[in-house]
Image (cartoon, rainbow, N blue to C red; front, top):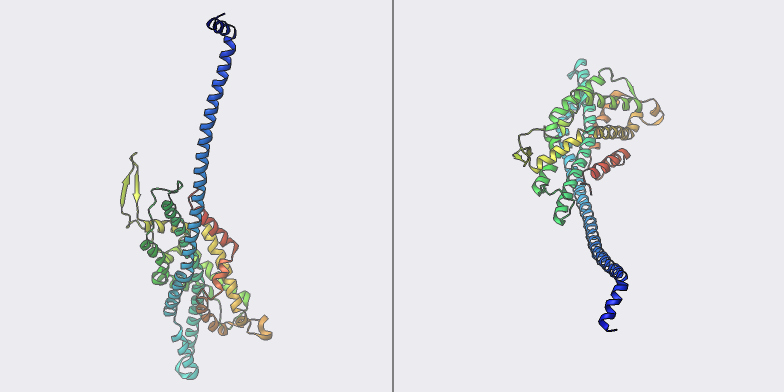
Length: 378
């Protein structure tokens, strides 16, 4: 048999087996090539994921560094400056020296003041002393919380800026960068309370103080419990009088649309308001301050602040010695009350008052959640 005939006969007898074998080999080769292709693709994807994770870790490290930097600025510069400015304004607007000098003059020269004049001076001194103390307590508490809100909101925008610089896929591409001028202008709003808010805050607080102290006579005995209840009642009346969130007007400018720069139209015909970065920061801050959660934080912080104030006042209220349990006449307590304002407004880097507020669990939880919630989701 010739080779040609042999091959033909072999093909005829084994044709099916050969086709099946060829099919199996071809399929195996195809699957191998497919596996090799997808393996390489998976390796590329894995490298991209690794790179993205590294970029995310870098972003987190960068934003943490930025946040800590701004927090240090707030703690060492913004807050001390704001409180120092606040203390100066309160001392100027609630200067009690003219009252004490007239009372001292009347004491040294009995015929210079009538009984009615003395009583009127003591009544004014009582009202203004408590006004000064409670305003100092309220202002340092709320102002320190307000500045922390500012820092958290700046931290969010710094995250966006840092992510943009690193080319993160998680970035909101349309986000506008925060330049240094906007940042400084935004932080400078912490002086609004001293420059403008006190003008309205002082008379409003004075009305609340007068309402609470109207029934308190100078001969009435005050102990720590009475003083705490009196202070808390003043704060509650002040916070609840007027429209909801009226106290926000003392901290920051009124919300207005005068600085909106224009409007933009999207492809689908919708109109989008175009505002500058500073206005955006202010709008976000106002939204946080208007939240029920922040209201709870303010309330809790003021409670802790009152307790801290009572610790400072305890010796004066009791009068020392065996009288510590019976209390002190209000007339003897008023001078100490007037001195508490400057003590509360000492440099926050040296006083424990701010640290007490920061150590409140509810406050720390709020700012932890605020910082997390203002970060773009990964």
